[in-house]
Amino acid sequence: DCVSKVPLESDEGYFNSYAHFGIHYDMLSDKVRTESYRDAILNNKESIKDKVILDLGCGTGILSMFSATAGAKKVIALDQSEVIY
Image 1 (cartoon, rainbow, N blue to C red):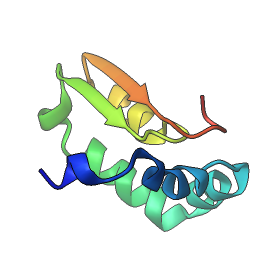
Image 2: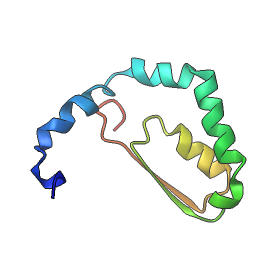
Image 3: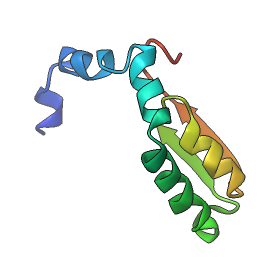
Image 4: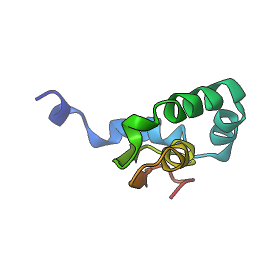
């Protein structure tokens, strides 16, 4: 199993890259990106309505909020980044 051989510390760089407000501000400020995600979720409400949504690596939770707006039964948003939790 390849995954079991990867040291836990190897994730540190990835999570640290999201550990400051700037990256989240940049992503939320990217209007095309944010609106594209919003439109993809809201234009596919039938796939989300009454479902339980698990948003791993949710960051600011914007996709979770879109999912709730689309009619998800329940939304669980989890993030490991220091700045979020």
